[in-house]
Structure formats: structure tokens, C-alpha cells
Image 1 (cartoon, rainbow, N blue to C red):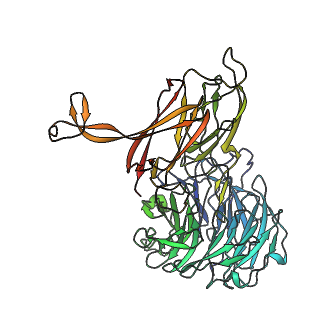
Image 2: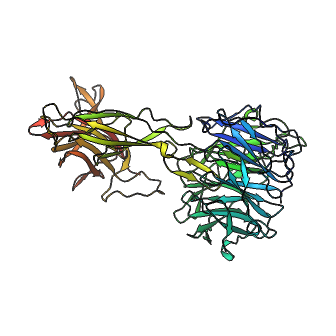
Image 3: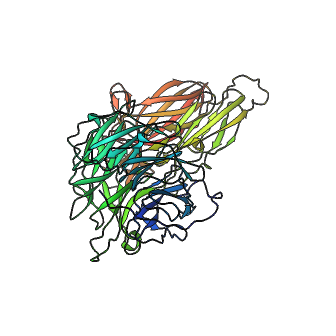
Amino acid sequence: MRGPILRLLLPLLGSFLLLPAGALASDVYATSTSDASISAFSVGMSGALSPIACTTGCETENKLSEPEGIVASPNGRFVFVANSNGNGKVAGGIIEAFAVGAGGELSPIECHSGCSAGEQPVGLAVSPNGQFLYSADAQSHTVSPFSIAADGLLSPIACGSECELSNSTPEDVAISPNGRFLYVNEREEDRIAVFAIAGDGSLTKVPCASACATLSAPEGLAVSPDGRFLYAAVTREIAVFEIGAGGALTPIPCPSCGTAANPRTPAISPNGRFLYTTNNNLPKSSIPAFEIQSDGALTPIVSCGSYCNTTDGTDPEGLVVSPSGRFVYASDREDVLLAKSYERGIMSAFAIGSAGELSELECPELTCAIGENTGFFGLTITPDQGPAAAFSDTPAPAGSPSTFNGSASAASSPETTVATYDWSFGDGASMQGGAATPTHIYSAPGTYTVTLTVTDSAGCSTQLTYTGQTASCNGSSAASASQTITVPPVAGSGPGPISSLRPLITGLSQTQKLWRAGKAPAHISSRSKKAPLGSTFSFELNEAASVTFEFTTTAPGREHGHSCVAETRKNKAKRRCTRTITAGAMTFSAHSGANKVVFDGRISSARTLAPGSYTLIATATASGERSVPAKLRFTVTSA
């Protein structure tokens, strides 16, 4: 059991009505157990941390306080801190609330009586919809539920015996991504308690006896983004449970879930592929990394040797994965480099590789250790608020390309960019993963509703991503925008479909730029580390036409006059050059409007594209007329 938390006394500020909807960047906040403050950092594009100056709400008057748990709201506007000894106006355990300013600076939100919790609140979680907060109260053996107002103010939710736990010292809580169930670690009882969450935030216990037991005292909790699995840090391993339809748990055997010593705080990547945990393993602490399998079991990832040592720290507690899924941050309570009698907190930063492996990022002491006598404990990071879709349109007469421009779409954080543009043109045609500025040919005049849905480079779009305590991606309807356009008829033509004297092929795109050739239809494997099998080419025609796909590649050659030809014994002394050769071609009939060609590299029944880089040249022919060629590039790999 950890030591008691003392008082966090904070100055109070005025109105919060002019606060922005959320911070523009991901910010990291860490509670300091030794000097009773909250340290704030901004996350750069490279993952580097930069201290955020805090002049209004991060310093406390009582230097003996020890704030512990901390969590950010899904909308990024508020941060909540567990405090066991009041704020000068309210005695006992309370939850402090802070507003997050545009630059990441915190401002305290005044609490009169509604923020009272049980004795020694430690772990915190905010519901996926941002309406409720729950604390695990270690000394009173209770769970405290609160409702969260639009301005961040807390109000207690009545919860008598339903929220009492028998001598269990709860210290962490986690909520299922659907917001229906709450999980609490019962350390003294070696089990996980389960509660059903009602629409008003109130709790009801869910029976879960032996199935919720752990081999030893459970510490931190995390839930997979798909809501199927719960993970608990126990002595020398991560315990894995399947979450049933009614919230009850079923243990999953996992012989490969072991850690070197004492894991404390698990954290899951936003894409649900990787799990990391803090690990106390003197004289060096570490961050074990695991890949999450389809059945929930874990497979160790070898990175930084066997484990990633944290920066000169011996007692890591907090752990977060950035909303982009690119970085991991850990907070250590002690810095063994400083031969002093007090604790000095320090942050450790890591980059996440494509297979989940970690590589340490430089985090200088002046940047990652804030002040003297500072010991970090809890850690949270503000979520990705998702991109906002916006586009303009220039309708053209039916049979001619109408143009669209989604370049005004924007990501919510400098850490991410708009990565994917999905278009629906309102006539049954769509372009998934298309360009920001596509064209589309409408075969008939009329009124059409065009919809653009964007996804940022972290995979955040319209859906929320949640892993137990708060969101990684607070996706919303802002990532999708719709407009109604009117396509006029060609001058002198009627209202029906029209045909052009010359075929037009537009909007040529592909689902994969790097893929493997194969003999079977493509399939999806989210856990595969290999390149995907095959690709799908999409294009549009203004009329039915015969379409030829010509695949060209490059090869070394020798100059011959103004040409580049294959090397022979006679010309091998000539100047080297690069020549373009045709690897193969295929012709097929295509219809007016949107067309899709599923292609796995087979040009004919006996010939398949070899690994290498290619250019696809697409040409349409109709009524003796030939279109302007459309081109794109792709790579075929062997692995």
C-alpha cells in the first residue's frame, strides 16, 4: 500500500467560458509527489518533450502534499487529479479539476463540495463520453462516482453499499470502451471487481468470483480499444481476461505474458496492437513491450535488448502512449544519478517502431526533470481531437470532370496530419483513400450530395478510441463533411446521360502502394507484419470503354545514339543509362462511372509481376478515340 496523499492547495481563478474546445497539441501532465505540483510538457513532432510554463495553476502552497492519480478528459479541455487531504475548503479526499488552456497551461476550477471522494483516492478514469469520472479510494475501500459538467465542475453520484469493497485497497480503475462497465483492482483480495454503469453514471456490482481472481495483488489496469480484453499488472506478469457481453471476466491463459519483475502500469497503443508496462527491476527499471494477438494473449517484443531501461530511474509509475501511437512516455519517481536525500522525478521517452519495438529518445535532464525535490507519480496525455473535414467543389456539365478540393481539411494537432480522404460522390460512386483534390464525372445532370470523411495520421476519424482511463482519439462527426452540388447538362443536350466524342479516364487511385504478388484473392490480416497481398485500382469513365493497363518498369542499359538499350557485349563500354521496359499489359471492358480492378500481380494465367517498382499506365478507347493516359506508381515486394 502506498503512503497517504496529503493536501493539494491551489489558487482559484475566474471564468472558464472563453476556453478553447481543446488544446491544439498533445500535452503530457505528471503529478509530483514530493513538491505537490503538476508538471506539464508539450509533445513535439519528433516526440521530444518541452516544459510548459505554468504560472496560474500548477504550484501548491502545501509542499507536503502528494497528488497521485491524474487523467485528462476525452475532449482535452480538463485534467483531474486525485488528492487525499482537501483543498483548504473541502476536507478529506477530493478530486481537483483543472481547465486546459490553449498552450497547455492549467487553471484550477473551484470546488466547493461536489468534488469530495473517499479516503485516499488514487486511480482515476473518465468515461468515454466524458460525462462521468470514477476514483479508486484506497483507504476507505470504495469507488467514488462523479458527473462532469460542461465547465468541468464535478458533482457526486449517490452510491452507498454498491460502491463499497471489502478491505481491498483499490488503487486503479478502468472503463470498457462502450462505457457500460467499470473495473477496479482489489489488491488485498487478489481480484478484479466489476461494476455495471447505468445511464446516469451510477454503479451496480456484477458478480464475478473465481473468474476475476489474479495470482497476486493486481496493480494497473488497461482495456483493449475493441473492448474485448482487460489487462492487469500482477507480480512478474500481465494477467489477461476476456470481457463478456455482461461485463464479467474470463481469464485467458498466457504463458508468454511474463515480465522481469514487478509491472505496475499497462498502456495500450491506439491501434490495439501493442501493450507496454512499467517494470520495477532494480538497479534499472524498464518498459517491457508486447504484441497483442487476436485472442488477447501477449507475445514479447524484443526491443532495446530484452527491455527498454528508463532514463536513470528506479521506480517508474506512470506510463502513456501518445495519441499518434508513435511514442511512449514513462515517469520515474527517483533519479539515481542525484546523490541527494530527496526524490527527483524524471521522464523517459521512447519511439515506437512499426513492429512495436521501442527505441529510446533523448530527454535532457533540464527538459525532463522539473525543479528539485520533484518525484513524479501519475501520468496522462491529452487525446487527439480528430481531424476536421472541409472541401470546395467546382461542378462541371455531365460527362465532364467535376473537381473537388479537400485541402482545407485539417488535423487537430501538430503531431498529426490528414492522411486519408474518403469521398462519396452521391451517385453511387466513391473513392476510398483518394486524393485531396479528386475529379469525378457525373453521367447525368442533377443534384448530388457529396461527402468527404478524413482520417489523420494517427488513425483518428469519426470514431472514439479508448483504452480504460481516457480516450486516445476523441473522434467526432467533424471528420466528415457533406455538400450538395448541382451538375448542369451540356449546352443543348437533354436531361439524360450523355456521351463524349472522346473517352475520359479520371480519378485513377490504388488502395496499396506497396504490396505482395500472389495467386489468391487479397485478404485482410491486421496482425500480419508482411506487406498486404495485392491492391485495388479505381478509376472513372465518362462512357463505356475498353481499358488497357500497361505495366512498365526500369532496367539498366547502355546509351545508343539518343536511345537507351539493353546491354550487350558490343555496347558494354558505352555510358550507362536507365531504360523503360514494358513488363506486361492487360485489356478489359469497363463501364461508365466508377470501376474497380482487384489486382494481385497476375498479368495472365502464366505470368505474374516480379518484385520491383512499376508504373501503371491506364488508357481508355471508345469509338476509335483514345483517352489521355492516367498514371500511378506502386511497388511489389516479396515479403
